[in-house]
Image (cartoon, rainbow, N blue to C red; front, top):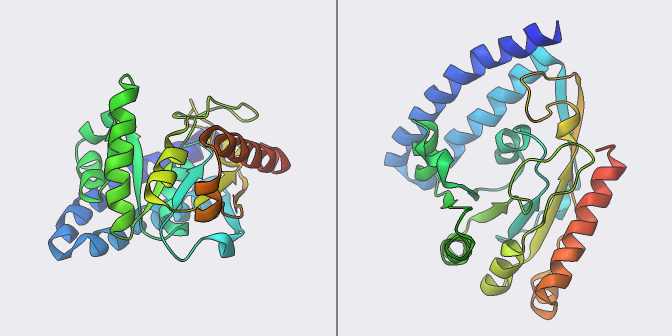
Length: 238
């Protein structure tokens, strides 16, 4: 039954993604902000389908910790779920993501229209340059930046190799860092289409202020973020 429910989700969600991506592209005619609010339909619709077919819902803890001004969001990456849902939870932002995603018809084009920052992971030096240059520009324009510091999805209970690009960007742009943890991998694990019923918790942790970012050393900030996120994930059972 779980397989059938999961398959039904994809059969509806996949074509819906194409339609919403086309609407995002059309919405760009009315400005970037309009396109962003159209893109939130993707997360909203995914949530409705997950609730209806898979018995998955979510709650948000600590939403009051989101700064009023743009910052760098550092988020755990266990699942595809957070990519669909973060736009519903956070203020307008730009993703830092692997360049290959931009080549996906409609979906990748919509990401480009929304100001996503593509990087080539096999070229770390250029990737860091892109993150800092384009990320700083996006932050100055009023957008938050979302980075998955592990670079790829990891299984529940695992910790990836946290990279310092988010810390370096926050220092350069003189903004805060917002750690985010969740347990989405319990319901939507990587590497399978199966989705298991339950409640996903996304926990927004207290931000590291811009002042503390400037005062701290890059590696210390990275260690602090990793410790905060991983401790919260363990507390959430993931």
